[in-house]
Image (cartoon, rainbow, N blue to C red):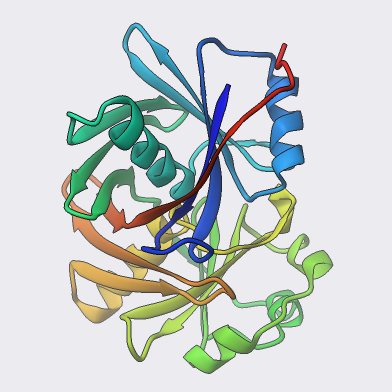
Length: 261
């Protein structure tokens, strides 16, 4: 079985968010995929099988299977459109979050994702204790988005993982108005066995709609300010959808010798 290591939301290796993409002839047991994801120890390992209706895509963190992942979807599209269907400019994936379409547009891969419904919730002392700074606002969908006073706060924070586990959201996001991008964010996911996700595409299904409303813009340039960093080019679409675009870079192609039963 071939496994591709692809850095997403970047144009050069060793930056952006790394994902492992495994292209398989059949589905192994979930426990086997979980073990490989733990072995890779990346924020996501994507598994793909070509079925009658098309490509079926699943995502695993080192701790669990998740229902939506942006960077591993981008990485999967990069692999399919460059190594399996190079004549195509678009690929559709059947996933736990429905059908996700990805279109190649020059060097960018444009994903069409659902938008999370958000509700404002009270800012709490627990949020301040977890992040090290007190948020100005907090909104909750599937993930928590905390809005902070400055980009500097977001870049400098070192959240306490144990305290993050005690507050709302699958992923805890910190965001602020950016200087060179419309917004700057960080994504922390100890509940998924990931302290920090270097560039989280799915989190921007909540982050971008919030900033789009605040800035009165439909197109948002987002920057994920992790140590690796990454750029996301986002645009609100009709029917509660969002288009998230980014580049990708191949790091390596390996052969998995262990049999996945």
